[in-house]
Amino acid sequence: MSGAYAHEYNAETRRANRQRAKPGRSIILKIKRCDGPGKPSRWESFKVPVEPGSNVISCLKYIASHPVTTDGKRTTPVVWDSGCLEEVCGACTMVINGRVRQSCSCLIDEYAPDEGDTLTLEPMSKFPVIRDLWVDRERMFHALRRVKAWVPIDGTYNLGPGPKESPEHQQMRYALSECMTCGCCLEACPQYLQESDPEKWDTSFIGAAAINQVRLFNEHKTGKRLKADRLEALMGPGGITDCGNAQNCVKVCPKGIPLTESIAAVGRSTTVHAFTRFFKGR
Amino acid sequence: MNERQGFLDRHHFLLRRLHSLTGILPIGVFLIAHLTTNSSLAWGKYGLRAEGHGVPLVDGGVMYFNKEVAWINTQVPHLLLIEITLWASILFHSVLGVYYATTGRSNTARYPFQDNWRYTLQRISGYIGVAFIFYHVATLRWGWTFLVPGGTQWSHEFSASTLIAALQGSTGGWTPVGLAVSIAYFLGVSLLVFHFANGLWTAAITWGLTISQQAQRRWGVVCSAVGVGLMLAAWSALGAVFVGDYEAARAVEVRMLKDKYGEDHLNEVLEKQVPPHAAESQASVLSTD
Ligand code: SF4
Ligand code: SF4
Ligand code: FES
Image 1: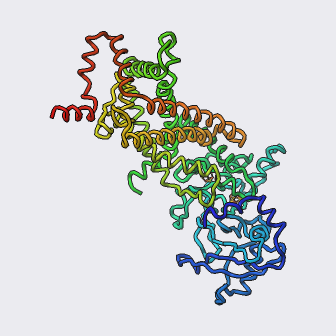
Image 2: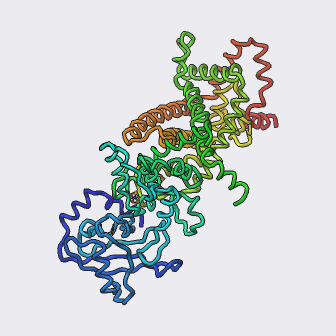
Image 3: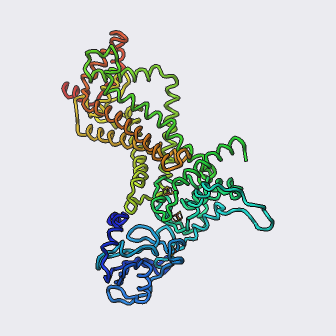
């Protein structure tokens, strides 16, 4: 499961594959399976007929109704998670041919254009597996709470008209707001490791997604009331300092969020915050 | 949570930023000065001005380098204080660096991006760099001659010749162990230059100086230029040592000492010098037998 897949990362190759893909073929889905938390994992292969436009989810649905391996053995249906089916919820994220991405938008034609080609599916490795391809991304949501990724309005009284926002600033924030908490950036990050003990989530590396949310909400005219709290949360163990600048996150983010710019921008904020705190006190 | 963890956690941000800072100041600044000085072994003839006329290139390098080393050892004020600050900084940067490096898991096999290789190489160069610096300082500065092939003791009066002997493995030319030491020097110094150039690039992100991708790219060009320049300085110095000849360099140094202090002092220096090399004394022992 390593460099052998490198060529498939290339958008050129994927486009070319799509053009030459043979209709009416069957492919092999090789799936890393696991019956539940803490259980050992195993590989099973399934033969699946595909049509133009088939994606990984449609293949998984086929397997759910024909749970028979290539050895002819009857098995349990493969479990996966999904929601929107249009790459906006992030629930269906998994590792496909060695690289993390959403499975709902993963076209078979791009990855397995020939009869009998194999496509490998694995659950993300940085989150605990619930079953088969379904993982628990709770630590990501915990991270959002850790940095107070919200705008503090309690809705009990009238706040008056909202603050003015320039179109440029709005555009900039829009790009940051597209995060769907899918976890791709964390799966690819060499500094983000699986931590199944929730007790340790407050001090283990928070990852690019939450750092980007800190920038988003600190840039919000009302949201920035919590700016100091957010920066303090990122200056402790497992905060922004633990980023090693490998910049994998920005390359795998399906939403094209400028994560490394966000990391640098928040880095600057923490620098300023630290100096201010040192000379001025809290 | 034990005591040590508590301390590290309470000062997490400060320690991380000090780790970043020490890599540039004083360590990086020292690296620039050190490699520039060393490279004069290659281009020194042209730095000698009038004195250099008619001097062969190799001898000119030895002369200039020897002058610079003598200047550092006799003129720079608070030399010991500077050295101790430097050693303390390197110790701090290395210990924390190794500890921080253990918090990651390299994944270049799955994500073979150039930046990811940089990340991995930064850690590898750190590990190897610490070992190399320790060997380098222990042998040439602290005089742990048992780790030097041929047992050469480096001395600042004979800076070039003793360096040649230490790297070539003997006072009489190349030995297999000398070759190994030289390869280690080449690898060690190259990796450290990379470590510094790359660290300079990532520090700008860490501190928040370069934010946009264009800014990061532009700063990347600057850091690459610094890296290439230092690499050339380091390699030219090593090249001069590799082609250097112990006896020839020593002859130049003796001449310089004589010119500077006169015959009497020269003899004093020569007597004071620790019997320079085990290889030679062994040879004389054998011949008297
Ligand atoms: S930042 Fe991108 S990769 Fe990371 S969770 Fe959000 S959408 Fe996914
Ligand atoms: S830049 Fe930081 S957050 Fe992004 S992949 Fe690298 S270490 Fe992880
Ligand atoms: S199902 Fe929502 S992103 Fe794939």
